[in-house]
Amino acid sequence: MKYVVVVVTTSSREEANKIVNALLDEKLIACANVFGPVSSSFWWQGKIDKAEEYLVFMKTEAELFEKITSCIKRLHSYEVPEIIALPIVKGFKPYLEWISNTLAGE
Figure 1 (cartoon, rainbow, N blue to C red):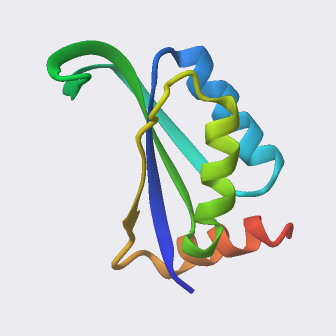
Figure 2: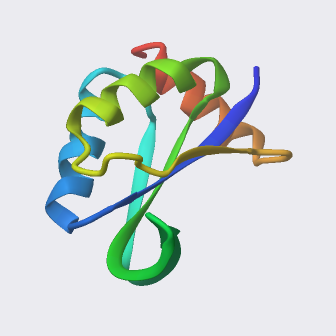
């Protein structure tokens, strides 16, 4: 089983919570952390832009990434939302088992 942290940025805490709640309801993530606001700088439409955003870390299994992406795209206000998965290389075994058990509905 491969575990990942899916990272997403949103325009508001409300949008972050809406996405997190939908993914939790569908058992696509075991848990999430919402940080922010954070200051973001990025290239967009040929120029450097800045925004105040909220950063979301969601713990899940890698095989669920495509379903998670579909759900986020449906709910997200950005034209091109940041949706990336970072591998969990190592973790406390009981915690990783908790992720699997949570996603299995136990």
